[in-house]
Amino acid sequence: MFGWLKGGLLLGVVFFAAVLLAKPVGVSTEFAVASGWLWSWLDGSIAVADATAKSGFASSNAYFDESGGKLAKAIANPLNYGVLFVLAMAVGAFVSARLRGGVAAAEKAMPGLWRANFGNSTAKRYAWAFVGGFIVLYGARLAGGCTSGHMMSGMMQTALSGYLFAVSAFAVGIPVALMLYKKEK
Amino acid sequence: MEMILPVVLGVAFGFMLDRVGATNPNYIMGMLRLSNLHLAKVILLAIAVASTLLMAGLSLGLVDVGHMSVKATYIGVVIGGALLGLGFALAGYCPGTGWTALATGRKDALWFVLGGLLGAAAYASSHAWWKASGLLDGWLGGKVTLGAIDGSAFAAVWPAMSGTGVGLMVAGALMLLVGLLPDRVR
Image (cartoon, rainbow over all chains, first blue to last red; front, top):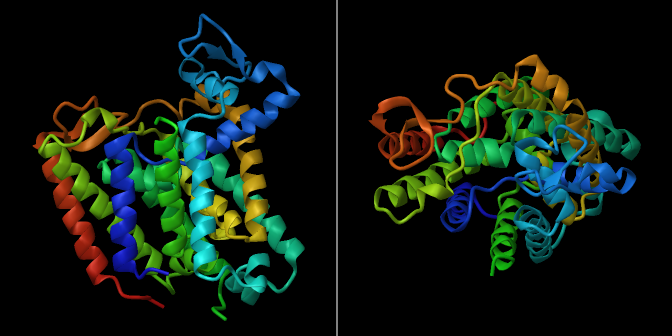
């Protein structure tokens, strides 16, 4: 693992490189695209070609239909910039984890800090991880971005929305974590 | 070519998230419970470095200002941020780190990602309600940066101030803060 100095410098270079070469980093939009893509298997009206829409696509869902059907277009053509970026992130993390010897078996089921406070039940951990994921992505889509897009990419551009998002997320995250994780070991 | 760029950038980003420990929920929980500020330092320093390079690059004309993308400010940003903070503490993952943690073999991250897909779909289903509530309407100027950035499409909180100058000052302040932060506060 990298120390905070080396890690922060290199991570900062990656965020800058993304803006220099293309656009700011973002992740949570692709969760919306992926969920819409799965949804479109059940409901064909989630993304349909529509010559009158700005993007060329429309959706029966008001969210996917926003901004001239921007998300509907991404759902209909999922091999786009944002989706490829997020898929590639998994490759990068996989390679890094391999190179440092992987994650220990006990840690793979749940983080040690969770185990110290809530015991060994994997069912309990998985259930709360699922609930956490639901809340995180619901919140990120409501806010219009997540830790990457709003906080990091936003604050590097001095976007007012980025600061507000970060303050709000940590103002809730810190007291909740202090209440949840009383034991360190 | 347009297919290669997101792949190269994505691999680099995913690699770095794992290298700094962000794919490990112990570090995220430790940051939020204030017992391990490693990730707080990494995040603040990364923002400061990226911002310094961006603002200097914009001033020197080396970065296309059209590549900037500033998100709108509205009350929903504050509510959504608070929800993200709640789930962040509960799971120890955010969207990018949950997804990359899954790639490192963490099984709880799979449940986080599945919950996230359902959460995103639930938001899509309820978007019309939020829209009608007015909580998504522009607030405090909407898409704004702190100072005015020449040539950008975005308005400024303080139009008389140079956007790149303010950006460099904020980045400097963040670097100072990183230097002053202890390893842990409890």
